[in-house]
Structures are given as structure tokens and as C-alpha cells.
Image 1 (cartoon, rainbow, N blue to C red):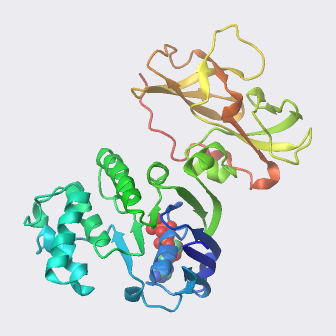
Image 2 (image 1 turned 45 degrees about the vertical axis):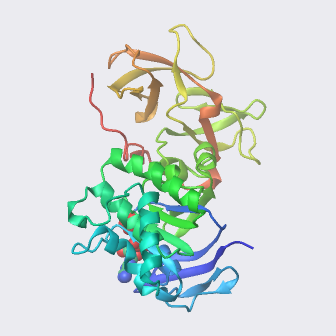
Image 3 (image 1 turned 60 degrees about the horizontal axis):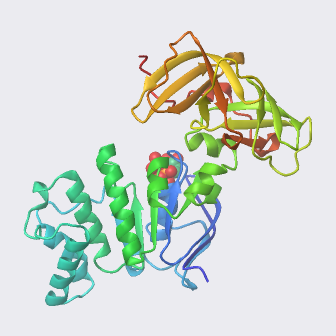
Length: 374
Ligand code: ATP
């Protein structure tokens, strides 16, 4: 039996549907991430699970017990929300102990628990410090300790690190995941940031307009996005239309020439129209005389050195542009010159045309990287 089962949850606000028939199962000790663009319903689903919002339809079972009618404060869930800030007039220790008093812990037990949690979040010795003296990262550690203190059955986190800068966030994400794993804490984590979801989750639920688009491990989602929407949301912007010209081996005709893919979705036939994605890390520099499938020779539109890789943007036919991350700094082609690249077949992900609406060309540049030619 799953630890938490969410079935047929629907919700509308002012007659506008926000969640449509959501079903999910969460295993004990699992870290599940709800990922999706702004407004897709992540927070509403989290709030329904937490009991802060009532669903219009559906059921939530915790270890087999129907908790749908149970009020939030009786669910024994922990919350760590970005806007659920620490009490500024209290010390670190008082903040962490706050929930314990409400749960009837005696003073000695609570004091021992506070010490254990301070150690867990690597803040031993900070007990008497007022929270306003802490850095942003330290405040988030205290917030985590506070939400974990009463041993919640389920921890719910909504963009908990959203206010922090990228470097600090990356560091805290690794720590957060390791703390939750150490405790075997079941957790649901909401974010709109794919990198954050991949770093923290055992499994990711990708949502779109109130529905679940795809569920899987971070690796499975990245390697096999189920739809062009999933691919695009996971940072793959090289989306092309094409057609199948061979099934074995899988070969496609595309606006940038013939491409071999590692595999095709089941049910495709020769001549079928498809959409395909070329993963940004799937290209390597080729020699100028390389020919045949999977070799691209296209004018370089822009390049941008990023340290571990160089981001290159190629101008493709039909007004398309393709972006790749080439490893290392040694790419010496200048904008305007022709670049020669080879694409690995495993970097070509194919979708049947029926799998989703056609991607509009104008979408291709959406949330594309910032360019600085050099
Ligand atoms: P974000 O990442 O921006 O927080 P989200 O995926 O968490 O987005 P929700 O906050 O769940 O999305 O909102 C889903 C939709 O429901 C949005 O269109 C939002 O405006 C609407 N909505 C959410 N709460 C309410 C409310 N209390 N009353 C009316 N509409 C609401």
C-alpha cells in the first residue's frame, strides 16, 4: 500500500478549473517533487494535500485512512513555505521548539529535540541567536529544523529556497535532500525550477494546466520526456518537425538533414510526421569534411563561453535556431562562420505527431539562454 494516495482530485476557483482529476501515489520515505510552470496548480495541489484547501472532488488517503475531511492541524504534517517565515522576535531555539510546545512536548524533551535538530542542520551553538542575525541560508536551515521538529508524517515544501541566490540554493538543495534521506522523511516539494526538482527529488511529477503531464525519476524524465512540452520545460529547446524515413535503424528527415535516433516511439511507420528534440549536450565538434547523417554544417549565430562548456547557437533553415553545449573552451568558430557538428543518436528524442500539439516556432526561443558574443 502506498504511504499517501491522492485520487481523482479536482478543484476550481470561481468556476475556473485549476486541477483536473489528479491521481498520485507517494511511497514512505519518498521525496516527490511537483514541477511545472507558474499557475499550473502545484501550490493548490499541495495546499489540498496539507488540508489548507478543500478539493471539489477526490480523496486523500494516508496509510489507508481517508484524511480528506481531517483539518490541517490534525494531519501532523510539516510545512516549509517561502512565505512561512521564522518568528523574528524569537531566538533560533525558540523558533525550532515552537511546534513542540503546541504538540505538548515537555521542556526537557523539547530541549533535547532542539539540540538534535540544530546538529542535523549543521547549526549547533546557534540556539540563543536571534533569527534576524542569521544569513538567508541559515534562516532556511532553521525553518527546516522547525518544520521537522514535531516528526511530521509528511513534510510539504513550497519553493522553500526561492528567495536565495543560485549558488546557495544549489548547496542547500544537496543538504536538504541528504537530511530528508537520513530521516527517511516523506516529503512533497513544489518548485517551478527543473534544476531544483532534479537535485532534490526521487520522483518528479511534471504538471501542466492542472493536469499531470509526466511522472518519473529525474533521469527518466530527462532521457525520455514524454511530450514536446515536457522536453521544452526540462530545458530542451531544439525542437524540429520531421518525418520517418526508416524504422531500423531509426532515421528521420528534418530541416537540418537526416538524423539517426537511438529509438522511435512504438507504432510509428515510414512516412509518419514526427516532432523531435535534440538535447543540448548531444553535439560534438566535427571535421569540415565530415558528411552523412547526424552531421550538421550551419552558420554560427552566437557563442557564449560558460566555463565547463561553450554555448553555441546555430542558424538553421526555416528560421529555426539550434542551441548546443559543447564541452570545454576550445571552440574557435566565430559568429557568421560555418560550424561543423556531429549529433549523437541518443541525443535525438522523437515524439509521434499525435503526442502533442505542434510546437509553435515562436516558442523555440522562450527562456533560451542569455547571449553574450565573444
Ligand atoms: P506558482 O508557481 O506561480 O505559485 P502554481 O503552479 O503553484 O503557480 P497555483 O498557485 O496552484 O499555481 O494556482 C493555479 C491557478 O489557480 C492560478 O491560475 C491561480 O491564479 C489560481 N488560484 C490559486 N489560488 C486561488 C484562489 N484562492 N482564488 C482564486 N484563484 C486561485
